[in-house]
Image 1 (spheres, rainbow, N blue to C red):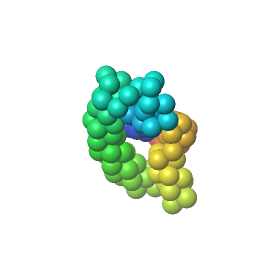
Image 2: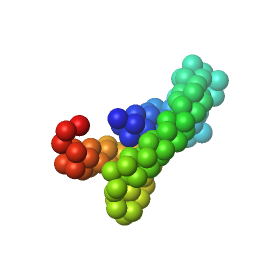
Image 3: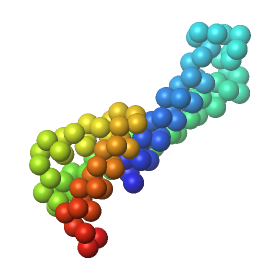
Image 4: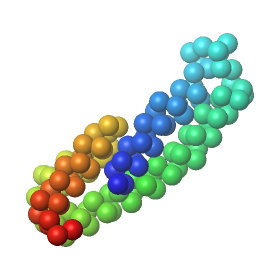
Length: 108
């Protein structure tokens, strides 16, 4: 679940927050600095960016704890953690981690 939240937050930042904040550098007439859209982009980057950082740290901690408890191989653990940093790959990483845990521990 954390990888999904991390993925959604970074995608929102990249697709919504960053363009709204920095489009004025490319097209100043479309969204001038100081406009409502620019302010919204700045707020998204500030608040969601900060939240994303904390959520990502929680993801890394939980993934490491799960890797130790489930005795994942080191390569699987590293791939899972690295994929958590790349938009869209975090969804795949969570899917394969859940599949592996469910296969190893069907009682959960």
